[in-house]
Image (cartoon, rainbow, N blue to C red; front, side, top):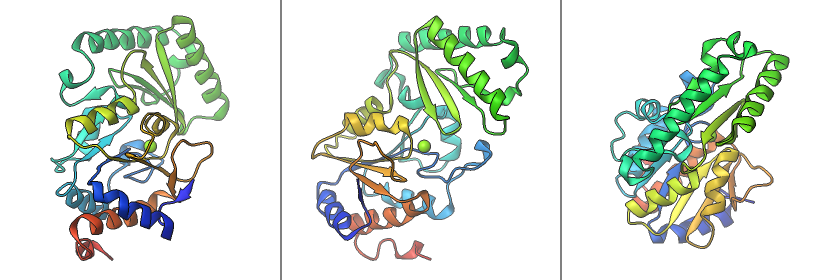
Length: 268
Ligand SMILES: [Mg+2]
């Protein structure tokens, strides 16, 4: 992996932006800094202004593990953005992605799994907020739990998912998501957004293992994968060292599409 903000990276980016790519971001840990409380994760005003401006020049999307309604609230006012929730499974236009029948089946599978989870005493004793029902998926968040309980609960949830079958396990930061099999992942979602935007080239930024689905599926000269926080192994060819560098990269993108002074009003 190479640093996208190095002189080599900047020169590659300049060439790549001649193709006027679509730019798609993950949300938590990529566009917005992580927070001990996941409900408090928000875009910084500078990031919001840069993304808004970028979306006036290029198609821009956000693909997140969050439920779509939750993501929409956090990106309220950024009306040009194409949004996908639930790890790639929940598109704004249902018919554009997951078939209605498939998503109805997934909702039933999630609800049945949650009822089964309720029968586990270790899960029943956990605070309600640690099991998030995202309708098309379930996320177990263990931040704040003691490690022994977290590990035990996580193992039991994974075992139950294995026994019942039909779920894809998606590890996250201090979390584990269960997504019904057959639903699209972030890679499928990113490629679908690219097609709807009638774009041929894609820049994708993400910080987690689930973003590797995009880096793996979108490879080749029409794609530029950027991992936030260098990580090995990763299928991304580029990285930025940490989330706080993303604004700088947005300024670079903006200068390339809107001219060198475009980002100036937002610069500190
Ligand atoms: Mg993330």
